[in-house]
Amino acid sequence: MKLPLSVVSPCIYWMVRAMYSSLRFTESGREVVDAFAAQRTPMVFALWHDELFPVIHAKRNLELIAIISQSKDGELLSNFMERFGFRTARGSSSRGGVKALLQVSKAMQRDSISCCITVDGPRGPRHKVKEGAIFVANRTNAPIIPLRIHMASSYKFKRAWDNFQVPIPFSSVHVAFGEPYHVPEGTLDKEAFEQECLKLEERLNAL
Image: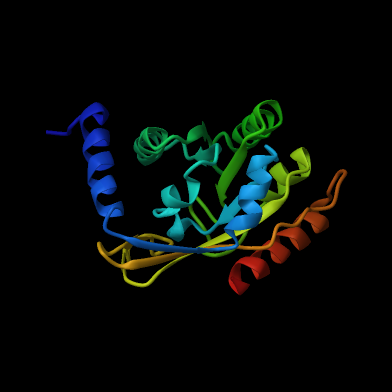
């Protein structure tokens, strides 16, 4: 018998909270992020899909909206992240993507909040930046913050397209915030988008 979302989601939430309490977190580059947050400056946090799981710790006092796919798995993830204080917009590169990006951009400008985008999701290719984060940053004039989450010990889902990682309880996790930067203002053509994607990819790989 398949359990309803109203049962599954709270169970996962409390399991994750218990696991999170056992992890040893360290951070670098947080000071700039907190300074932007204090001024209510919207930011675009860009990270790899396989490093998404510990992002809840990085959120803390930040007001964040995240794009979640419209799949059945996305419904569970959306419910789960909302329990941890995230706002969500539903869409992906295959369904509702532009609508979700516009929704996120509007929320950032209206409410002075930031967004979190897995730049190679939801289906890859792994660690290849797509245009979503660039689109939002260009539209809102918000700085992009490259974000890497390094897990000292993790379980990797080898059958997942991205080798999705979950940290092993009681292990160490380092959250690295990269240097903020802006994409060019004005309308970007296809070549400019490609160049900006490569720039972000290089910055993520360097963290």
